[in-house]
Image (cartoon, rainbow, N blue to C red; front, side):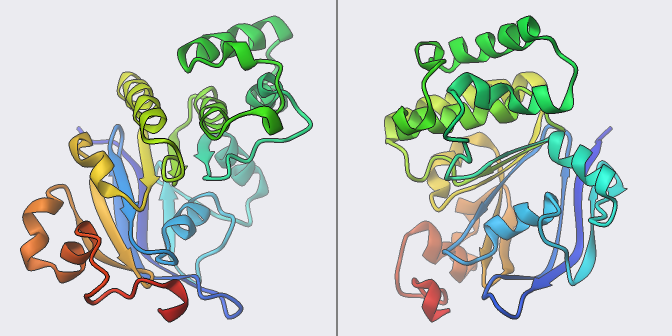
Length: 257
C-alpha cells in the first residue's frame, strides 16, 4: 500500500518583481520515492522547493505534506514543517561563526531537549560516515566545497526528515567527491525509506537511481516519467536537454526566456 508524502494540485506562482514562476504544477510523491527536478536556469526548480517549505505562497492551487495542507498562515505548523524537512541548498547555508559540529546539531539543540552527550554521540556517527570527524571543530570558512556540502547534508539527515529536499547539491562539486557523497546518501535514503526531491542541471548523473525525472521550462512541466531516455525521440524538450543541445525549443540563457 502506497503512502502519500507530497502532493501539488494545480499550483501556480508568479511575482511581479521577479521572472520566477511556475504554472499549473501537479505532482505526487509517495514514501520512499525520489524525484529529480531538472531544466535550464530559471525553470522553477528551486521555487518548487521554496513552495514546499512555505517560503513563498502559491497564487493558486494547494500543497499537501503527508495529506496535511501546507498553510503558511499556521505559524506553528510551518515551524514543525521546517524542522521535519531536510533542506540543503547549493550554498550549503552554514553559519560561519559556528563550528562544523555546532552547525550540524543546531536544529536538534533548537527543537529538541537532547543533552550535550546525546547530541555529540548522534553527530559523531554521521561525521565518521561522511569522513568529517577530523574537521569537527573547524568553521565553514576553512572547509572545502565538498566538506561544506557534506556538513549541510548531515544537518538535514540528522533530524530524520519526513522529506528531503536537495537543491543542486552536486552541480558545483568535483565529480569524484560528488559521486562518493551520492553513494553514501542513497544508501542512507534506502535504509530509512526516505522520500526525497533533488534538483540538478545534469540528469545523467542520476540515470541509474530510478528517479522520476521532471523536466521544467518556463515554470511548466515538459516531461515527467521514469524512462526519460526512451522518450527522447517523442519529446523535443527532453531530447534537447539530455543532449545539451543549444538549438531547440528551449532557450539557453535565462535572460532570453
